[in-house]
Image (cartoon, rainbow, N blue to C red; front, side, top):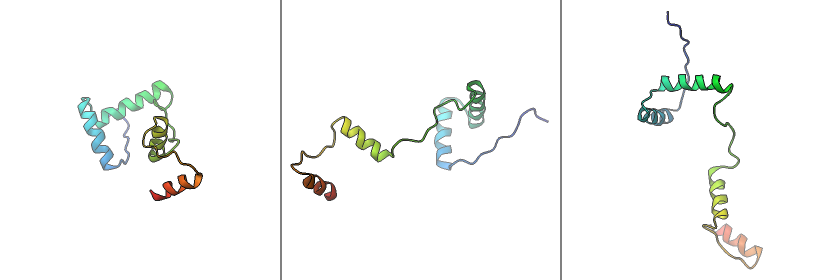
Length: 90
C-alpha cells in the first residue's frame, strides 16, 4: 500500500482546463500542483495567499478606476437633475 492519502475535489471544467494549460506551461500537472499547495499550507501554517471577498463587483471596480483616472466621465452638469437625466439615459 502506498504511503500517501487520496485527495479528491470537484472543480468547474472550464477552470480546470485553464489551470491545466497554465500548469503545463510551468512544467507541472494538477496532482503536483495540489501537493505543492498542501506543502505551502503547512509551511505558511495557513492558506499561502490572501483570501478575501472583493470589496466591489467588477463593474463597480472599473467605474471607480475610471473616476480615479478621469476616464469615461460625463458632464459637467449644471444641476443634479441634468446629471440624473444623463444617468437614466444610459
